[in-house]
Length: 463
Image (cartoon, rainbow, N blue to C red):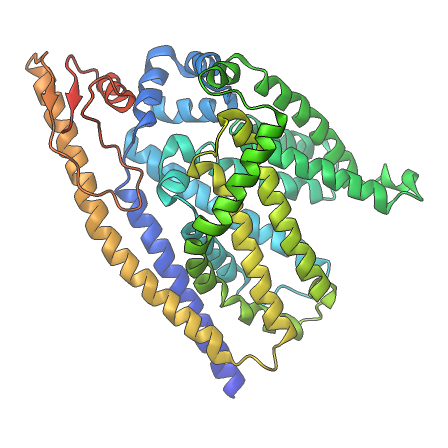
């Protein structure tokens, strides 16, 4: 009876935590507005067309054809709020669906059935990923950034699903091309990391089947992995040698091979010492309930091979290794550490690592860790989500209102025929958003993009 009452309480607390997170996410989607570079890309898509704008970006800044084609198609034909809400809902749905499917494929090989509340745990995992992001605004709500980095991650996860799919027909290969085509063509820094993972996995396959290579080449997953790794590598080489990438690198200090490795190592140390410690409290809070998942697996016919101290050590080492590898592309292009949005993959890996650790603890020490631990973690996370939702609502509602008033004001002045520069009132804090605030310099890129987007005959600035 006590066990049943705990399961019921655990289920309700999971649902409460999930509901609060989705509510927070929906509120943030509703009040979201275009920001910074969005203004230029929206203007450019309307001025040059979907393909013309993508080609222009590839030639003058960065060759991200997949991201820019998606971005241009959305922003050219749909109004701002529909684009931002529709994109945000789609990326969250696809992320949840991909993680649920991957967990299903993993547990299907080792357990009799999926644990209870698997979907709720996936939503909780997305919640943990959300709060572990190094910049929530850049990762989730700044469209031109999220479409590059976050959606690339989602595409990569779906690509893995199609690789693991036992079917080996034309449709599966087409879906593979779409998934990896977007990953490679949307964020060159993330693309390099995913290709590295693919090639390492291929060599692991070869090592495992070294005594029977004839069986290896018959495996559908190996064929698909070899196919996509080869094409993706060629595509990435074309992107890195593209005119836009070379032009951007010419504006920065050129980093050689050893310089790039040094910059990556320095960035990794900076992250481990100065950035990740601030993310850890959030990750711990939303990962602790996974102890309950580990407990469920005990009586679920689950093969315990994955939950060994040796595997825990190897997974931690793999996390550090992949973390370093993921920093190399941005270090090469930027000759310095990349922006927070380029750390999306690290935030995701950090989320997975801690979810695994707490699932491991729940499985290995199910008889020592009381049920009150998971319940307390869920209660604390729900309280934190309630506080954050109330706080962010008051911030972003005011912010979006002031953004709308600013746009209404400048359009009215433009209609009157104004040509002299106009000083604007500063925007309030933007909360979890990437602020669209302008500079005191009318020639600053944010000011210029804002002017182009709204077709103004005068410059705007903020003191």
